[in-house]
Image (tube, rainbow, N blue to C red):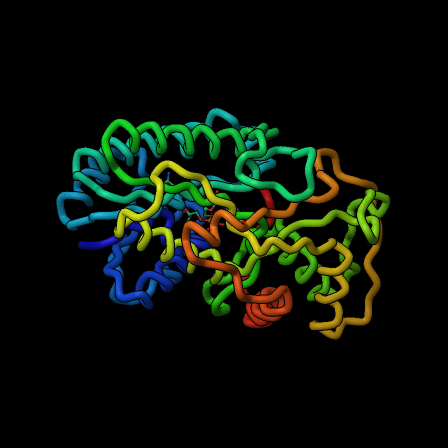
Length: 327
Ligand SMILES: NC(=O)c1ccc[n+]([C@@H]2O[C@H](COP(=O)([O-])OP(=O)(O)OC[C@H]3O[C@@H](n4cnc5c(N)ncnc54)[C@H](O)[C@@H]3O)[C@@H](O)[C@H]2O)c1
């Protein structure tokens, strides 16, 4: 009996593997290494290098391993790229998911955890977003995540496979330098990259209707996100959770861009001041997860601080983790 982690060589997938192993679960990973790195997968965990669109490889994987549960993280996640290549995003994020689900059903997989995103909400009207807020994704990336949720829920309802979708908010930090996020688009890596170069971090918009005028978001440590997957996997295995749900994965606390930048400057000890640039289109003033449902359903809550996130991300930068700019 083992868990298949798709996208296991990715930033979050590698942390999920670590948490599952720590929880004494057997794990096998699949990843096409398009944005992932095989060195993130711990020794002893088999990594199958394949794209999920390759149905034969996926079928072989289920034949060779007794997989009873799947954590599906493999996806393209670059919002800008999705605006330029929507068809590719639907193929990689939705069509590949359909292939995977067909093979899960054929292999009688019992449990399926789907990696969703706060991007499904789009630009919500409320600051604190619970799972009942209408989903109105504004980018192809967010649309593929919402379509994925529908597909997973539909297949689960039709076949009896137990499913959960986890909607992560702003993921940051790392458990070790080797597992760090190398994608230079999220706030924490962007700010630390600027500080490392001795440049001033940028704040996009300081005239929002928020306490300090900058956007407010819910930042969550990737190790907390990973632990939520173990809680979800266990709940699905026990069968004591309502299948088909989507749960927010955040801290429930809002932090402003200026607070992140100020803390990063303090932690790195760099003597620079941020520069304020004009607002970026599409940025909501404040988006914070309502986390009550995840707490109740998963008996899980985020425990790591913003400082933990920035310190660990800074250690990774100092260990020479290279960051990749958006395409
Ligand atoms: N990082 C975030 O802040 C964030 C927030 C919300 C949701 N998510 C979701 O979490 C998941 C993991 O994100 P991440 O940050 O670890 O990204 P990542 O790019 O580091 O990881 C994704 C992994 O999937 C692999 N992959 C992509 N398409 C594949 C395919 N068709 N077949 C096989 N492998 C494939 C990549 O090589 C990569 O290793 C994604 O589904 C993403 O949409 C991420």
